[in-house]
Image (cartoon, rainbow, N blue to C red; front, side, top):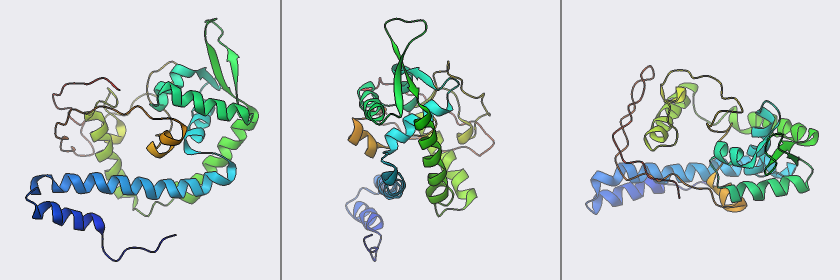
Length: 235
């Protein structure tokens, strides 16, 4: 582990932004830069847990998604939609998992042109082991108080909603508690695949914000209001 820097480089960048006359953008620049750095820190922690299990976060996500599904299987296209990852990335991930005996392809019961991706007993056991270790080593203590995590989930959920990441207000963003997604629902997966893993297993398809300002998050009891904005298609 590299020793910590004496001063915060993001704070220095913020000062430089203001000094160059870009003060109106300085806070947003610092927030974006900090988010990228936080992602690097968290992915390093996650990799340290998953590497001994011969898993990447993308493969863990796929196993967890299948393990949480009602039948333990789903079409590739649905897995791609749930994980918000390009189908090519899902195909690459499934191939790696298949080689390890963690998933298998099965005939679709009603569509002769399609296959299902199914988790194997070995894959289910490994996914549970990985989840327990991630809970213990990473998720149980991120170094932030519970109340701060609640606020962080609300802020990030509000941003994702405004950017068109999902269409119904999220309970994490202060919206009403929704029903549990079933295998037939189009919504998102159990955990969010990291961009770092997307680069390793194939590129994630990013959402395409139109550059409008993010809304001010509402209070925790209220539903965030989506600003009027033009929805762009995913790349």
